[in-house]
Image 1 (cartoon, rainbow, N blue to C red):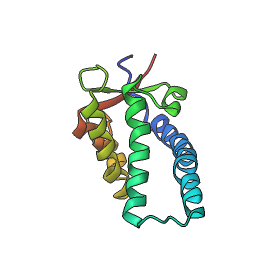
Image 2 (image 1 turned 135 degrees about the horizontal axis):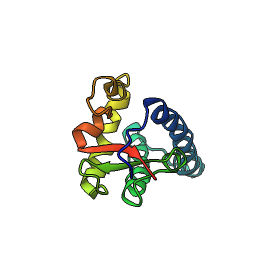
Image 3 (image 1 turned 90 degrees about the horizontal axis):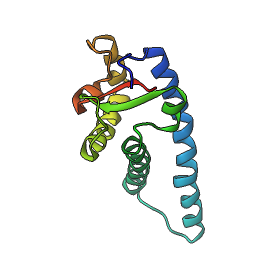
Image 4 (image 1 turned 180 degrees about the horizontal axis):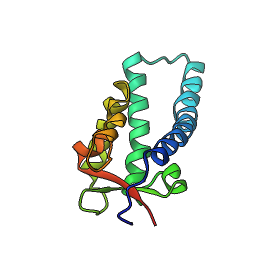
Length: 137
């Protein structure tokens, strides 16, 4: 991994691509099972549905970050998530990054906009979790 800090444009385009991947994961891992279960008359409460989405996406992101530090969009845009020391993420660090990314994104993108004021040009959830996004070789 190089010491290059990827541009915000590159990270935002990667984030858009990530949205397409997340959509397909939710389509297959969330919507299809809900359709099948509803065929048997089973319905879940809204809290259970949100928990399903949260855990499904956590499995995807944490697994990718712990196995190479990259999701498919990150591989395409040659980005990698590492800890502040430049080493691969620890499991709890990956979970923390994932959990912090939710409010970072849902609170009007404040965690993404943080990149404008951060001295290392990192997202807020990366700063708090002790991780960073860097350029992959």
